[in-house]
Length: 112
Length: 111
Image (cartoon, rainbow over all chains, first blue to last red; front, side):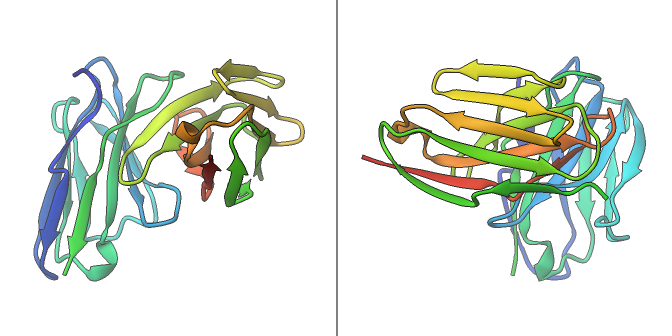
């Protein structure tokens, strides 16, 4: 499978715990994006990388959220001190400049 | 701030009928995407429209883009049950493939 891969598919955590998600983009894609989707809504942009550089972060991304792409390949999204409002589907996407954007299957986070 | 509006948000139609979903956006962009999402699944890329007047068709779906009117349409021809899903349009915010999505149109095709 050469698509965008995300791990885990589901994560249940207690409020206040830290969680980390991983995304492996399509190998030749140098752009990687994180989005968040809540029930009944379209995905909302969180942040994106070109190679290892994080070029933009949304105002939605509070200080509790951090994303990395250390070698310009896979990326991680960490949420510290989770809150119930963080419950959502976290989607990773990748692309090559000017090309179609492909999405992964997402990580469904539930904060209890 | 770029805003993307889709209508209708909910669409229930009979098999065999035709219908159009509309996507309006608020600022200039010449790149628009359509995605399909099944319940609990991720987004499947349907079309990328890259210029004014672009039209793309695949199967029973046809998408078009009018950048002057800031409007894209997704036309469904002779709907079948398998097309039941939520359809999103998304607009590129400035050439970096950073997308702003509409709220989606939930399509239900009844036998």
